Image 1 (cartoon, rainbow, N blue to C red):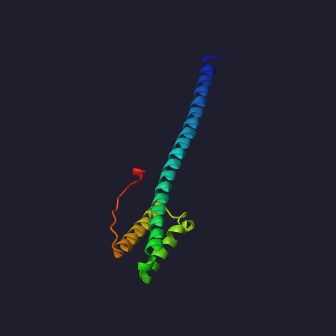
Image 2: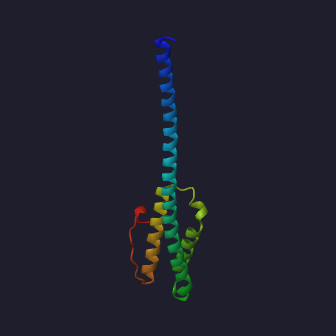
Image 3: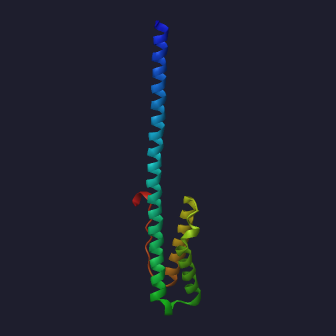
Length: 131
C-alpha cells in the first residue's frame, strides 16, 4: 500500500465521520427546537384557556346572579359572549395573533358589560412569560 492510498483512506474516513456528526447534529437540533416549540405552544394554550375560563365563569355568574336586574339587550350580549367563549372549535385553527385579537375583544366587551352593571373591575395586563 502506498502513501496515496493511506491518505485517501484517512480522508474518506474523516469525511464519513464528519457527515455522521453533521447528521447527528441536525437531528439533535430538530429535536431540541421541536421540544421548545411544543413547550411554548403548551404555555400559550394554557394562557388562552385560563383567560377563557375566567371570562366564562364571570359571564355565567353574571347571568345567574344578576339575571332579574339585567336589561334584555345586556342579557343578549352576555349570552352571545358566553357562546363565543364556549365555541372553542372555531378557535383552534386561528393563529396566535388572531387568538390574541379575539381575547382582547372579549376583554373589552366583558369590561363594557361590567361597567353597564356598575361592577368595578381591574384589568391585569399579562404576557406569556407571566404564566
